[in-house]
Length: 258
Image 1 (cartoon, rainbow, N blue to C red):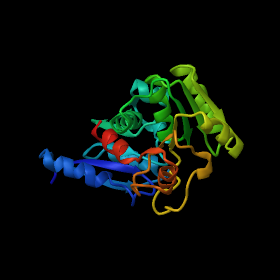
Image 2: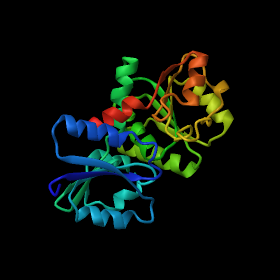
Image 3: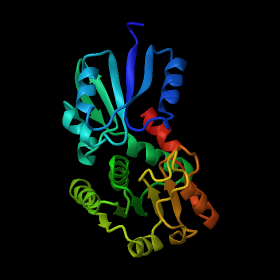
């Protein structure tokens, strides 16, 4: 009705997303007159869509690939942690003023603790992908006491930028490497956790995997922030080797709750 508060999900592609079902079922159970729906938009039309949101009955919106970083330049204010991370996944609309937050990393850490029964303290992490979600996870891990974080990305300048910002803004614990098999092998050999934040293996490209399974070893905890499919090829191969695995469902639920 005319009083329904709208909440959007801005990104592209979105047909794989569980977020509308998750949020709408929650709104219904709490008797909230809210409606959550996907808005497929890439970088070109993002400013026009945001102008519309400012002037409509939107409570706010979520942001996903490929807009988590570029949305920052269109916001009126950003929380301190999201500023440090340099990416936003949640925006609140207050009378046409858009305020950005980042709940991705918090969601990942809560999920990790629930599944693994231990926190990030003292562990070495290899993170594949330094886009919006990858950088949020890296910053939150550093904030929670990770000993070392090694970032890999197909674009070397992206992983370098995130590592430099993390070392300056949180603590000196991050480095980046060129995405080569010998570098991956060396860093994964003595890592505690490997996280796939690249989106490789996401529906519909379910036969893809971010790295050769021979680089994994049974003492690793292997995480994939993808939740569709529930178990990516990457996680299946990790389980075959004997690794403990964490899929993306817990992160999705916890970042959504936040």
